[in-house]
Length: 208
Image (tube, rainbow, N blue to C red; front, top):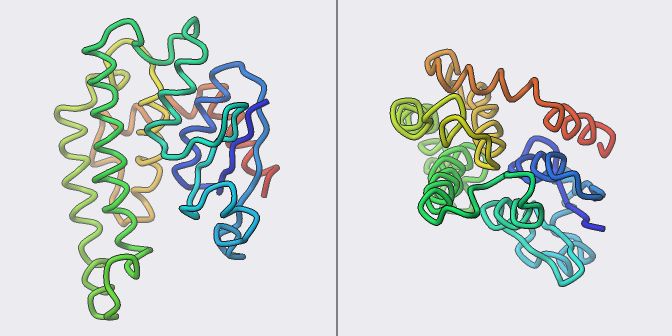
């Protein structure tokens, strides 16, 4: 049994959706950031980074969304959640996921986790003001080049679509109108109709 540690609304949602798509048996365990659960002694034994997601497997614990998505897809090759047989397409998917992790997520975090990068309150204020621009700039690239459509890799669904769905869902809170990006918006609406997405969202509520 796989156990995924999640916090509703965070990037852990992407791995949660991937598990729901996989058909594998799994359980979810909620970590409350509001209560400082990510810094609890018990959770730090699972993930010393104090972040989500963390996936407990029979071989140990895995962390980092990019790694978890690839791992889940590789467990069920028959589900075709990643182009595992095509090294180029697989690397292309990983490049997209890495961009979301290293750029888009960081842009978003500057509006909420400024203390990670600076101590001065004025620096935090500058970061917050910059978030709409940096998020918009990132989604211009996604809209006009990275999202081949209707899915990230074109006609075939992959775990990258779950990750994009999560990031697109953050735009409103970052004061960016998703309607500025018609292809991203269409992708988001399409993802909302997937049974795995609906299951993951429902399980988030149950875990809360």
